[in-house]
Image (cartoon, rainbow, N blue to C red):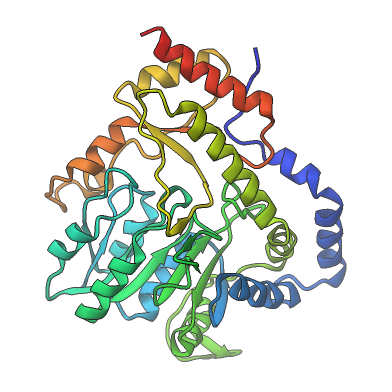
Length: 367
C-alpha cells in the first residue's frame, strides 16, 4: 500500500537545502535580524512579482488584513462584505477592527464570492469588499471591482492561498486597492514560521502601512499614531527570497497534478475545481465535493491517503459569530458539508497520485 501524505514540507526543503542553508547562514553571520537587507529586497521582488507599486512585509497574513483595514480607516459602524467560506482570520480581523463582517454567499462552482449576492448585501455602511481567492483560484475580480467602482468602495484582496494566481493576466494582490498575503508554512510560498505581506500601488496606503507595522513610527522614537509590532523578520525574508525563485516551477507542477486529478476523476460523481478561461489558478488545494464526504475521507484514510476538510463550518455558523449574524447562505453551508481536499504538492510522485485516484475510484465502485 502506498502511503500518501497530505503535504510533505521536508521534500521541498531537501530540494533547495543548499540555497536555504546558505541564506540562513548569511543572515546569522550579519547579526541583522529586523527590517534588514533581505526584507527590503524581498519586498521589492514580491512587488515586482505581483505587479504592484509596493509590498510591505508584516508578521503574518492575519496582520496583513488587520493593517489593510486600519490603513483604509475602516472601523466602528462600517461594514465589510466578505466570504463565509474561508479561514476565520478574514472575518476575525474585520470584527477586531470594530467593523461588521457581512457575509455574502459563494458561487457553488468556484466556492468564491458570488458578485450578485455581494451586490444585494451592499448598504450605506459598506466601506469595502474583501474577496478571498480560495484554494488558489481567483475570485471574479472584474465584476467585483466594477461593482466597487460604481459604489465607491475599497477592494481588499485576501490572497493568502493564491500567490501567483491570475485573473485576466493580472496577478492577484494587484487588482484591488490592497492585497493581503500569508506565508504560513503550508502555503505555496511558505516561510519557516509566520510571515505575511501587504501589496498596494497607492503610495499613501503604502506609507501608512509601513508606519503602522512599526508602532506608528516613521522615525525612531517618534510615534505619529498607535500602531503594532508587525514586522517580517530577516530570517523569514531570506527563506522566502530563495523560495520565490522556485515558485513558478512549483506552481506548474501543482497545475500538472491538478490536471491529472481533473482528467482521471472526471467520470466520477464528484464536483471538481472549475478554472475559467480568464483565470490561471495555482492550486493551493485541490478540493472536490461529494455528499459522501465523510465516508470517502474515512475510506481513503484506511488506505493510507491523507485528506483534509477546508472548511467544515461556514463562518456565519461558527460559535464565535452565533447571535451576531443571522443569515442563511445555502451554497456555503452545503460546501462545508461536502468539500474534501486531496493531497497536492509540487513534490508529489506519480505513484502517489495513482494511489489517490485508485482509492477514490475504489470507493465509488464499491457503491
